[in-house]
Length: 435
Ligand SMILES: [Zn+2]
Image (cartoon, rainbow, N blue to C red; front, top):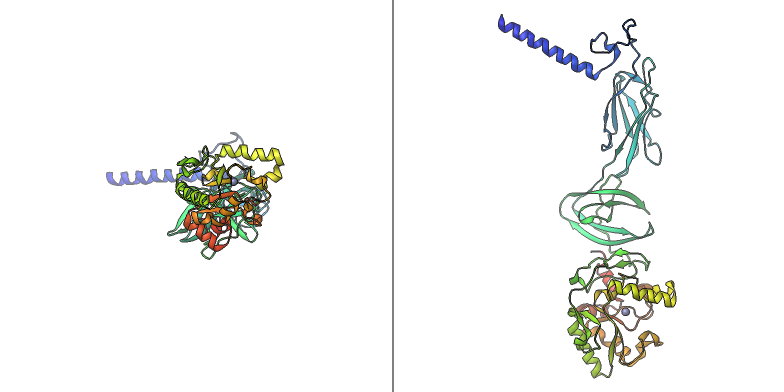
């Protein structure tokens, strides 16, 4: 008897708990004479349909992630009026075409967008007062924001990263990597340029790069992509690739690619150590071949001196400004590099002149002088290349400079000489601009 009584009490308390829980999620007046509901006045019985329907759940909720399965909501009581006019998904551009449905109970509704929603985009979900209960009480207009995925997914494969320049359509390949395993990274934008879609990656090795991809966040494998064409000589500032101090021979620098302002080679030595006039600096890695070249030139009767060598970023600011004052901005761009874009900042470039002579650019063509002619014919044998040869401005981005040589080492210099191209073309063709 005692045991039976305990069981029945336990059952009774379970019913009470269930009853309360039920009331708390369905505050509809139709649930009747529950003592927990407020009574408007002691004399008037509650009107069954005095309460407006409310939103009980939203999936995804505010700030949640929206996927292709759409948005699901439930109401506190059966409603009608749920359709594409009262339940909407919209972006800055406008309302997204969607299929809206209400289940037979009238208490849950679903909105499924009909288009593939772009990556990392925020939308507003709106439910309006056109939704009402069976007595005509309107839902209070409600809206909240949801976003599509911001994860870029990479399958194993080869990807190319791009940077955009000042003009939205200016695109330059900079980095290429092969991924050996599945990975993801966060991203924040998607856009189309031409026929291709691009995802902007915010983290990991691709941070700051755009990669080919789909609007759902899937990066596209570029396995068959070839090295893109040499970039046009636009005046933009994209960070140069291969800016390690050990990569001095393969850094692509032009009017597009730029060294960081803090790039200062660690091993600068005075040019007097190579048998030249001093108080100019070059990197120690170039000194031995420079000395050998100067000795060979002197033996051949070509007496070379330094006009200019290493220039810091700050030094290049002064140099470029000087050309602007002298010739105007447009002409300065042709004959001088903007700060960060100069090979002189690498510490491996020298502007030569004739010993005792005037500045080489004051000659009609310094390459016709004994010194200029000797360098043009022989410098490559010592690892030095004329960066801006005659007739190649469209490829090198600068006017002909028969005095400006860059040290790239004997192996590279011989390869470029054999290829018969400019250094910029050769470095780009090797893929040094994109890896
Ligand atoms: Zn120079």
